[in-house]
Length: 207
Image (cartoon, rainbow, N blue to C red):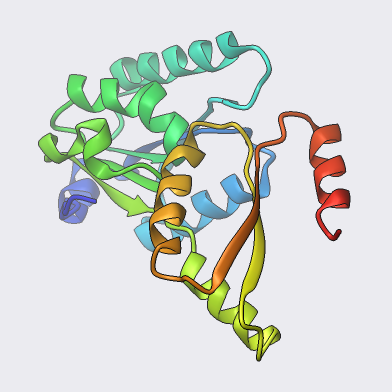
């Protein structure tokens, strides 16, 4: 991502308890979301922070749920005027951060868990946005497999993904990595769309 030196001194100076808005892509009760937020706040190191959280619930079956939540977050930006905005995963970038960071160029935005490229959202042209890209550990997984299955001339693997747009970039990077591993054979590329399809696919794969 881009490089942004967060104005920590000015955050402390602006008010006794700086305001942080966190817009999460999914639901508040998902542990991954909780862990991301906890880690971010620990590193931020501002004990008196005022925190507001908006959960976009991007996996909800009704897409209007996410749109309403994104509008709520945009409203908070205008009304509450946070000193810092933290967003996680791709849905929060496309559904909220691109518009919010453009409308509020003096507010720092920090993201985590993003699968697309920094420039895919136009963040390379926004000096107020930085973050941590999430990258799959494909080469490391292959190395672990070789340790677990020494002596195999060829590794046979199946790749199972859901239909979330997040996985388009992941798939492209894996396909590119595979070109450097001629000893790996992908026996199946699967994209089940329901729990039943997923269960059926996994049960069939060992054969």
